[in-house]
Figure (tube, rainbow, N blue to C red):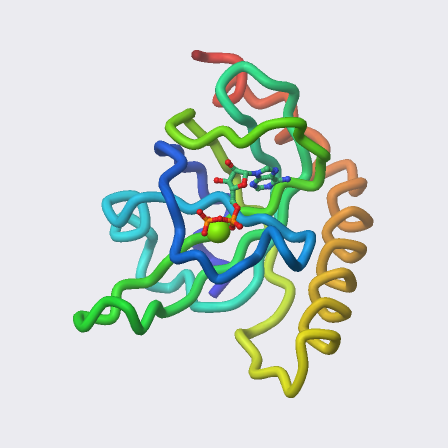
Length: 148
Ligand code: ADP
Ligand code: MG
């Protein structure tokens, strides 16, 4: 599942499915279906980490979930990026760029919201640590993020 990494992509931030990720304190910026459909087949469902940028913002760390959305009868994958940064405002309609660098874990079922939140905070800690590696730091200054 990691043979296609690093994987660079970009697209508009669209409305998600109102799963209340903001209430969890963990908002996820959703990509439109066209961006999701371009994902290489061997990028499996699960949680990934990498770098991200909202238009000309600084480049931030991110965790991203790739999963099947039951909303779509044809079972399209969804891609949801949580940017590890506190934003004052929403940024729907803006262009989000990402580079996916590593895999954290498969999709999981949770018995409670608390268990889900705890696991996501662990994912975030892992992403923050992994992205300090020098071979991952170099992607932060990749020309992909400086070309507007
Ligand atoms: P939706 O169901 O529309 O995706 P969410 O509750 O997941 O709603 O919130 C996602 C939205 O919150 C993003 O589209 C973005 O505009 C905003 N947002 C604010 N801060 C962040 C962040 N740190 N990471 C991702 N999205 C954020
Ligand atoms: Mg979302």
